[in-house]
Image (cartoon, rainbow, N blue to C red; front, top):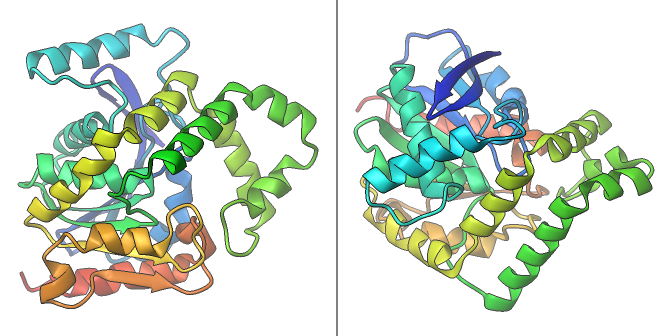
Length: 300
């Protein structure tokens, strides 16, 4: 694991050896997760493509610390300078940090692969940094429809999860087994359940709550289709047919705003018997689909 300072936060990242191909695959994890969930996919792609995975600010090993004020001050100063009226935990701000990361690592030809919230961040980054982001692949990510009652319930449940994490861990025996069965079509190995517990605990409270609330407002949800419709880069979506968190119909809805949806055939790939964690449920299939997508653009 290496680390780099981005806007006051030390970001943990892993970068594989360069290959003959110029594209760098950049993997962005989702809410309450970490870069580690991409390892099974990266293991299959690293021989052909240089791969970068990193922990978002406040998650995994990219911790903002107990005080965290220096990091927040850096971000707030940046937002003021750019006259941006937004919070420090929105997808747009995380995308800006991703852009700085690419610049610091001299990556100018990136394909972003984002899971769930990471997919939203990847879309924002493609909009903000079109010169370096050549394409986006969203995994278990979609949306663009604001359903008031559903989102209020989701935000409420999420807030309770963040608030009562210590109690949940203390009073639920075998919680790693529970996490190994949560949000997936079939149970994943118990080691992944333990990893999910670790990331669940390690997530900084402000980041965990902030990303939940700032990414699920009506304004944030409704702006996604506009962003997708304006992107010039290719954008693809990988969905799980059994995903109950981001159902395929919502993935297809967001995908339909991109020109590829109509002009060149559907830009959505659905994986059978797969839930919300495709990269650890079926890493072979995810890696195969990523490789297939990139092959279409190798001559460009």
